[in-house]
Image (cartoon, rainbow, N blue to C red; front, side, top):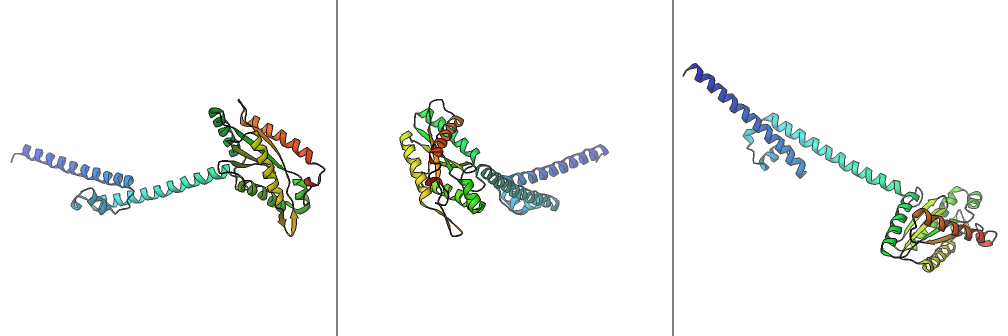
Length: 257
């Protein structure tokens, strides 16, 4: 064989070896990509057999690389799942009241805006009830803040237990609560507000052997054309303060009666 032929043969062999190495690398990358897509925690040899790669074509280094990639993908998947769960928890906490198991003001206003838009678009009635605990400061002063928290939970739980699943109960801040009523006109809302106020008063809070009668003032607002959440809440708030004023000085408005 001539010298030139030997050089050409060497070049051909080198090219073939390089091509084979590239092929193994491609197969290794394909194995890792397939694992990431299917989320199957298989061993390197199992993945190779699934892909139809002969065992003889996988060197120990390639197998080790695939196994490492698989472990990294598993770890990333676990971290992603944990991050997604943390996000769900944070979103829930951002919308939930710190004390009662109901939406906070932020979430309540968002739901109110949504229902007002729905009511105006489809011409269905909708209303808001605004509640305020009468004499709440007196409850805190007479029995302590733990008793005040118990009173707040009593109001929240009573409202939840006496409205429909389609209605929304929220704490608007301090001792104020709101209820959004879907498909409820002004007359129905007034009747519902009276019933809820009576239900709250009917069951006293028992705290360290003391009976605390919780009385609420309320106001209502029925959604009007062009209303927004701020206007609806302001109207219900004004009506609530009118009712609160009518309760002042009466026995019904005194805590612990």
